Length: 270
Image 1 (cartoon, rainbow, N blue to C red):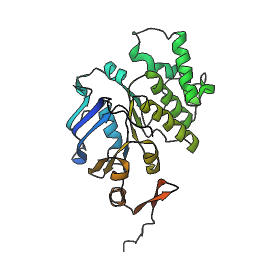
Image 2: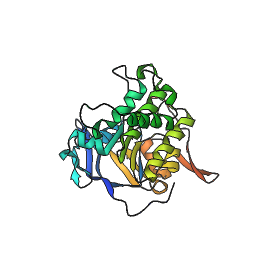
Image 3: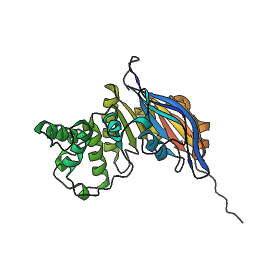
Image 4: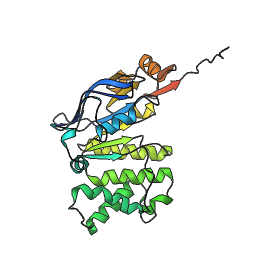
């Protein structure tokens, strides 16, 4: 990762944020700042509220506890159009509803920064095509999104975030459905955005990718947040094992951290 500039501003701030589902607490008391030039990963087992947190950061769901701030304003004070100018979202599920082409879907990323009902210019279309090329899906530009595989569609949606020009990216499991090569390519594009002064928050399941591409990490466990900060500090054997409910070990292989899950013993109830 590139050396971060220390004069870049805070884009997003969480002040004691928490979430509940009915009477069940997913997490509480999360206070952290996402600065320009930083990539944050959110990790933890299924059902701990990772997607719920991303919905709170996108302004789709209000925080059940605390406040989310975008720049110097409460997120709840923004209109949806204002949020779209500042935040690009790649959701976990992006099944198409209408038969838009891949290029048309990417052009939708420009909606918030253009006058209402305006048509895309030649320059806009070239910009969208270039975004598809960076994600290696430009050959699919004229294809209906509904005809694409899950991995192809994921990269097209990522191209839409790229063309939007928003400083903050929220990526919910962006590497799902992607083969290893395209996982790395997508995260390299994210890293380029961050190193150029943007910021990103991404939900991931692969802890090895966290150490490689992210500056900070939030570790969620059932019912609470285990901690947040630099990956080498937060992702220690004890806390990761507790969060995921099985023995985990971090090794060094050719200078890089590699996580291994040890076999858990199973006993039948009698």
